[in-house]
Image 1 (tube, rainbow, N blue to C red):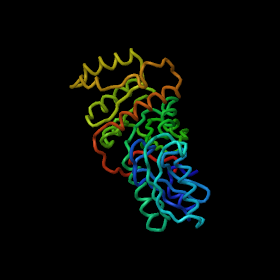
Image 2 (cartoon, helix red, strand yellow):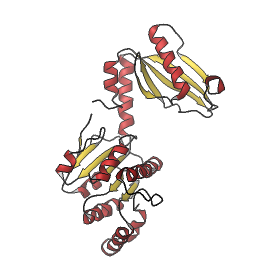
Image 3 (cartoon, rainbow, N blue to C red):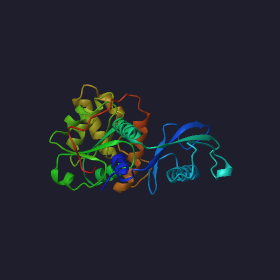
Length: 286
């Protein structure tokens, strides 16, 4: 099954399509000028923000495909007249996708994906699986890491990578700048080892560990005794997902933690170079 972000799959099955780009945006608008989408006779790929604006764009693109329209640009006020109350103004550009445009779109899509923050989830247990599922829906590159082959082989989450390794701390060392590390293995000693390694990286955007007040206190004592910089503990998020919601179900913890991770990743200012495929993991879904 192809990923919802697989632009090559979409283009191969929709030879005739229109590229719709937000070429101008003023005031309050659903998306900015980096937004684009593809429209074929029956399908769409990506989004310019949804709502009535997108319905109008899809309709116009399909009119272009049928030869029933010729305008390659629309200026749309987002007011009551179109049933969308953002209040801004959007300019849309329409272009038939030829071979040159197709190649440029693939390159653009690949570059956008390569720039995404990396999130390393250590532990393929119930919470790890739920967190991987939650993160598969957002624009990050997720790697699920475990020392146990059986647990990883059971993972079936589209769009994530898996990494089987006897030394998860080495994965931390090799991660690109701006990465997030989420630690929830089956072994507290292993959790502490990975956390110490991750906290030592000043360029990490997030270091979180599942746990309780007791586990947090135990880790603080261990860190102050065995690590040269015990102040690093202050950067640890534990427990992940916060303490406001008293619900220990894996899916709930995963949803709360995913929001934390995304906030940290998207506000972190460490530049990330385009990253090649992970040398640690394997993609389990295209």
